[in-house]
Length: 260
Image (cartoon, rainbow, N blue to C red; front, side):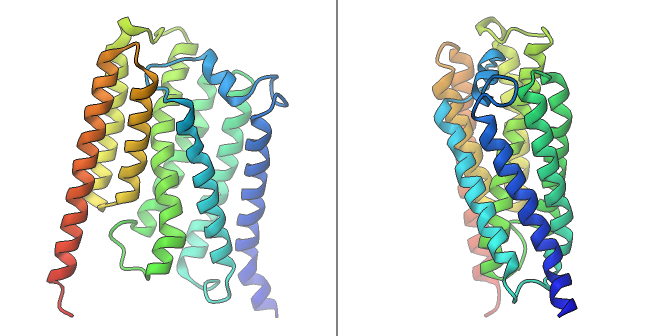
């Protein structure tokens, strides 16, 4: 009995941390914190890499996938798996950082909000690398119910981190992010592209690539007033698509070469 309770401690802590994150993020879409919604704060700090509003619907997918992970980790067959202990502490930390970011963002501390989102990116990167997502020989169910949620989450936070830094630059008055500042938008997109191509090439992670394409297309849709940014985002999306297809082909060929 005591062993069973101990095995459920971390999964239960994960659920509590996720529930708190979900509640705080839900309230952030109202005017409870700081008198503005998350989107309204974003509108007050415009950048040339802010995507169209529909793109943020990916949060629904992320939270649904994380919920799937949370259910999967509670199954009796999974409670003793190595990933539970390592992922749990980092996941709980990512939830704390997520909540911290929300409060700082909502109350207008845009520059300070960079710290928790960078921390969240680092935490998710640690989870990603520990699970060896994309190249791991883990069972198919574990890849779907554990790897996929963190792959999508990590990919989106990669883009969100660059966007948050850009918003902080606007808030601090370093750049107005107007068409005349298109070069900074291109630099920011190049940063997203560089990280994405590195992950796709080294990990052969299709999900990560698809999230990046989703974000880049959304940026192109939103930034129509700045053609150079639009072209860069579109070309970037095409490059990531090509790299993702190449990663799939390489993975397929390697599987075929393996002795049965």
